[in-house]
Structures are given as C-alpha cells and as structure tokens.
Length: 274
Image (cartoon, rainbow, N blue to C red):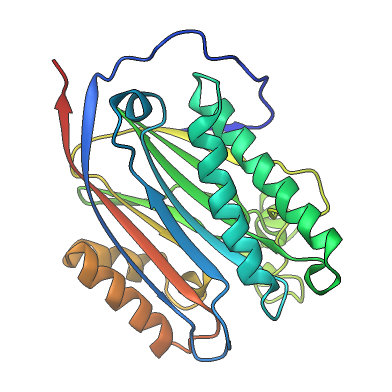
C-alpha cells in the first residue's frame, strides 16, 4: 500500500485508456441520526459509470462525508462536497486518477469554503471526505479528516486511512502516548476538513485490488463506539447488508453519540475484457 500526499501537477487527457478489466461489485449502506443529534450531517454516495470509456479512466466511485457546522450547515457541507467531488472527478481531463481525485477534493473544498463565507448562518461549516475509487485492477483512497476506510481481504482486516486529527499527529511525533492523547481536551480536533481555512492536503493511497476484497467506509459515529476488532468481526461474519445494519445498531447501543454512516463494497468479479 503506497501513500501519496498532494499536490500533483495537472496533466491533460491526451489518449484513450483501454478497459482491460470490468469490475462487478455488491454495495450496501446504512445511516442513522444517532441518539443525540436532531439532523443527519453524514452523507454517502456512489456512482458506477455505464460507459466503458469512463469505467476505464475513472472506475467506480464511493464516498462518505461527515459534515460539521451545526444546525443544517454540516448537512449542506457534506451534500455539496459529495456532489462536487464526483462531478469534478468524473469529468477532469487528466488520465492519472490521482490528479483527478486531488482536483475533485480541492474543488469541493473551495466550493464549501466559498458558500460558508458567503452565508452567515453557514460560516465555518465543513466536512470530512473519504473516497474509494475502484479502477480496473487498482484502488485509490482519498482521505480528508477522520472518517475511515477499511479493507477486509480473506482473514486480514486493515485500516487503510490514518485519521487527520490532533491525536494522530501528537502520537506520530512522539509528543504523547495514545492513551494520554485520547483523554486530552483536543482529542476530537481534526486537522483537515473540506471547507476548512487551512490549505487542503488530502492523503491519497493506492492499493492493488483482488476478487473478494471488501471495503468499508464509515463516519466517526461508528468508530467512536466500536473498536477495529468489533468492526472486523461483524464484517467478516455477515453479508454486506446485514453487516451494515449490525454495525450501526451496535453504535446506537453503545451510545449513539453522533450520526453514524457505513458504506460497504465487495469486489464480486474482475472480468477480463476481450
């Protein structure tokens, strides 16, 4: 697994990309208000192109965003981010999906930031963004904030993304051990957000893809209440839809302190194209 950090130079689309492998996937999702919030600021979305040309260059797109900003602002931020990311990513002229994905994240960032600055009630709104892009025999993950992407391959369950949070930063730098950091008053602070005032620096990961791979995208309404081990066990022992329902219900049973969203994707087949 290779992690690539922005920025990239924009490359122009100069040649067609052949469709060598056509993916078939199963998809399931579940979202819930939780037991505390009055509205759902999470948003999930996915897009699977029908044209072979778009499948070859851009593949399948899956997204989870967790908005913030209070009232309806967080919900608006996550809505704007998902729509903008998908639209820009699919139609960007670059051949390289890294370039298109970065441009899409930056476009979503600018749009949410501009709307927040223009409307007083939405000032300061923002959202996390976790995107999974399945392109032929490769997978790309785009990460902003502290929503997460996991992969289950056989018996191996791994967290693909690293939370862009204060906790992860101080632990990585050796300033504080994890147990102490997770009790700190700044433990919920995220360092990157779509619509934030700081320069946007998404993490971008490239992975190989295999038949049977199952990916899980989720907001922190899940991971605030379930450990990675609990998520692994639920995903491994159930079908996609049942797993999504059980995961969200477990988060609710654990307190439901936030909106909770999960989106699961299983690679059912990778067919060679003649």
